[in-house]
Length: 261
Image 1: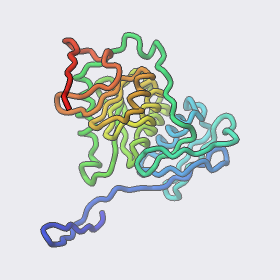
Image 2 (image 1 turned 180 degrees about the vertical axis):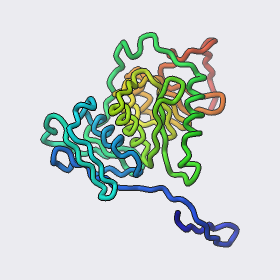
Image 3 (image 1 turned 180 degrees about the horizontal axis):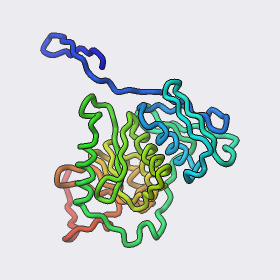
Image 4 (image 1 turned 60 degrees about the vertical axis):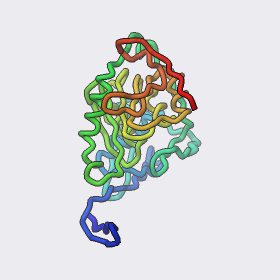
């Protein structure tokens, strides 16, 4: 808890309030300092594993010889199979606090077995988004935290972090270490849907991404090419679909309305 001072109607009043925790984690892989991750301090093993998975450096839990995180010293020591690429050029992403990657995000097209005959119920989207809001207790207490969840209409994995891209990496890492197959699942997120997020979802085989806020134009294009149903502005009883609406299991026909202005 920290003391904060609220200005209201010409006066300052003091009160105690929780503040979002932030820690740097130096990532050392195969004896080489790879990156410093800025994140919330909980479940850092999932974050580290997911980060390396999303960078294409590991594919399965067996690829780790060692995965050790020391919160007190802000250090993650990892030994993985194979050699690291000789040159890794960091790319700053649009994540909160600026995320880091070693490649420009490229979404792969979903394989036929991932998308064939797969449809999603709108009710499942609403249920997942409501569950996400209920689980996001950290935001309710002090704000400043993003959250994400995956599942088939009900939440299978959930994560929170100060960086919205970290939430996806955390889910990727937890799924990897626990042997959870994310193929065809829905992903709901509290943050804006960017290209990095769509690319990560595609790499994990996720078929639908939804948010209460908006996607970027390049995220829409990437989702269309990758075969992902992209949904924004999820409210109590409605949402907007930006790509692959045909994969939603709805009753009725699509009507097009032209708006003036």
